[in-house]
Amino acid sequence: MSGWADGFRDGLRPDAELTVSEWADQFRVLSSKASAEPGPFRCSRTPYIVEPLDCLSSSSTVQRVVLMFAAQTGKTELGMSWLGYCIQASPGPMLAIQPTVEMAKRLSKQRLESMIQETPCLNELIAPARSRDSGNTLFSKEYPGGILLLTGANSATGLRSAPCRYIFADEIDAFPVDVDGEGDPVSLAEKRATTFARRKILLTSTPTIKDHSRIEAEYLRSDMRRYFVPCPKCGHMQWLKWEQVKWEDNDPSTARYQCEGCGERFSDRHKPQMLRNGEWRATAEGDGKTAGFQLSGLYSPLGWFSWADMVEEFLRAKNDAPALKTWINTRAAETWEEDYASKISADGLRSRCEPYEYGVLPEGSLALTFGIDVQDNRLAISGWAWGRQEEGWLIYHQEIYGDPSRADLWKQVDEAVLREWSHASGAKLRPDVVAIDSGGHFTAEVYQFARERVRQGVIAVKGASSRNRPPISRGNRVDINSKGKTLKKGAMVYSCGVDTVKTTLFARLKHNEAGEGYLHFPEQATDEYFQQLTAERQVLKHTRGGFPVREWIKKPNARNESLDTLVYSYCALNHLYSRRDRRTIWDQFEKRLEEPAKGQLKSRKAAAHAASNFVSNW
Ligand SMILES: [Zn+2]
Image 1: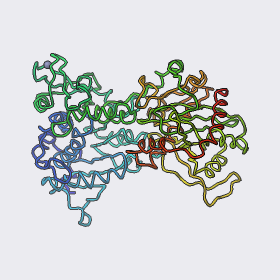
Image 2 (image 1 turned 135 degrees about the horizontal axis):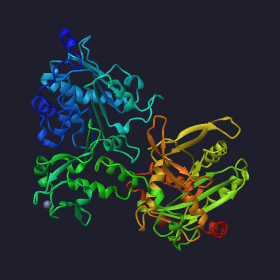
Image 3 (image 1 turned 90 degrees about the horizontal axis):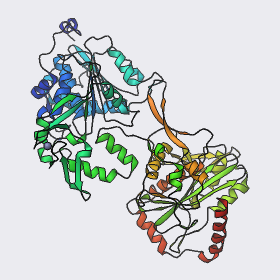
Image 4 (image 1 turned 180 degrees about the vertical axis):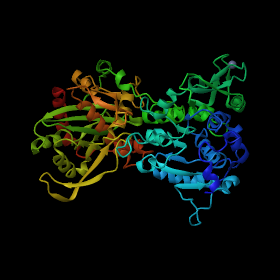
């Protein structure tokens, strides 16, 4: 660092003459390594980035820029242009934060390094990484007048670094809620900049869950700008909304945008012209220092992501809550509202019970799983039959009272569950997977029961407390029997993403049409069953750092075994996927119905006897 630069630290150095967008157009070159469209960078390709970029210029009075952008709209490139501008035109200490240190490393290697190499004016300022004492490493880049540090939001040490005038926090909704017990990583990072009067902070992300999304909270505090574009026909200025996208017969290629003014529908072809003539308009007052920008995938430039692509993805995702959530977050750039629980009532579910034969797998079902919940004085057991597209039928629900530390209770599970079940076609099926909760007070007993019945599809499961987990994970071996002794061949225990599964299932309980994802209930299901099924809802909680998190909670003193057993039955179904080819799994199951069952005659009597018992036990 030269003595000259030292004398012109923050605020003393004259402001850059160029805006960030002018700088990017003049100096930036996209490499073939990091970009699908290599060559000189052109803001005109994505005209909506000009204003956010210029808010980041030294000449702008805006202090914080918030981008709630869809994927494939050029969000990260926008951040990169700003970093380049700061290095060359308005140097100062700078901190770039990715969700994790690993991702920061990747950004440095893949994007930053190639921007520096391909952009001559940056190349001159930063020494090649290979030379010794170059001040150029993966996590820090020195240049005259400043230094760029890269870190992950999962590293409190990285966030506590020296004061920084510029902060670029990318994908902040993926940041941890709390970093090393020191609180919210975004606040922690922003504290680095408080001493700089002319600080700039760029926060970007695709959003996540409503009331849980950092970027949405920031956007709502801002002046909430939307990109208004003119209708090609009547000129009416409007910001693009998903509900204005129309298509016919589930055919994405017919996707058109319907003008809110004149009702005319037009295709993607008009997008370049609309984008070029668009402008950002604030839709809220804001605090005067924060400029917020929201942009959905409908604005992706021609050739990147079309309206037809958007419709196609939507049609694929619409019946699958987790997939739809991803679509809403990354394509619509909106938060996902998890309010299903509040809209489902026990009475509503009770009223849609159907008269199919209890204890028998109905027509259309092809697989059978069980979920067992272990309480201190009883076991709750549900049997779910599953068909294509995860249409489900409750065919069995039972509580067996007794002491789970005693073998005789478990013997009843053998008799009630691990037997042949009749299918409406006349075939016999044994349960495919039986998932038993091992998280209660009888862990060792569950392990032992599962270990001895691996061949019959019995697995020990455990609810994972963290969010965003898959329905069921790969198993871990545990090696303890009921007497606390280590076993050579211990049981496998599988962790279940109960949070994810509840979200999926509550979305499906809202379906009102049989078919994909629909859950059927027999007339034998009782009021108590449905009370338990709807005993949980999502609430907002605040972490120590004050950050809101959604959590499933049980109504006080309510029982919830019929929900838990459904959750475990569904995890059991997902366990099946991991063991077979998911593309052909239902065809494989269908074939089983054609094969004559072994020992069919002998078991028929036993099955009939058992079925009569279940009804009386509801
Ligand atoms: Zn119009």
